Image (tube, rainbow, N blue to C red; front, top):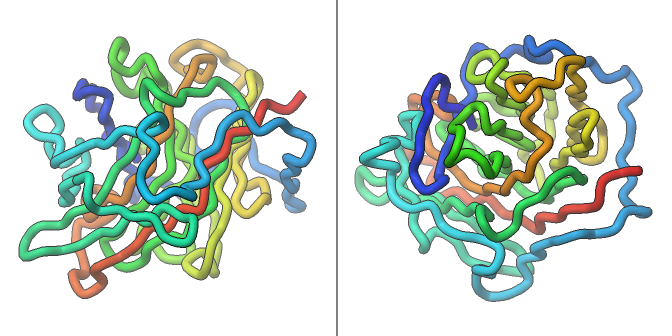
Length: 281
């Protein structure tokens, strides 16, 4: 979720937005490497589970999450992306052991929920994964992503951003995974678009295996993107620090829209779990 060229400070509630300039290819950053024709499969059986939220309760665990609220104004109107939704505490519930974020339209107003673990659950390295079912339709934009904990001090994009999964309804059958750094951000972020004809059907896993050496992204356990730059300056690799998690659904905006099909609402982003495993040895 990128907001190109914008440094924003709003209690840590930041968004960044993808753009149409992202190619069905890796980004321009040096060290972004193509995965092989035989994708590797991820196996976490031998790794220790460090933390998870299984969403088995009836209400949000506030030791894990906080809410972002409103439309970002006055400091970051439209959350830096010209998004249309208002974030509330009410657009989610729990059902069958899952978190359900519901996006609704009432008159001219779209409402949704955005959760972040800033100051509560923050991680440096490891395998981070969610299992979720994406909402669909033109104008919808769900995401599972991460921001560097030093964002309040250095701003975006120097803090770094890890977009584990983005989906946009106007580009069906595709999954977006992107890294934003000071060296490569916004339209030039290091990105991969993965064709996935059945991504709208049922649940899928989206994860990133993050070490001191590289980032490797996975969809349904298959490797889709590796980032391992030779240069390790803060501008190229801001990933040797803790990051916090975000879950949200946006409406419209620079990437999700600008047109929105109002006939699709309500839509639901259904999240089975978020899990963090220890780094691989």
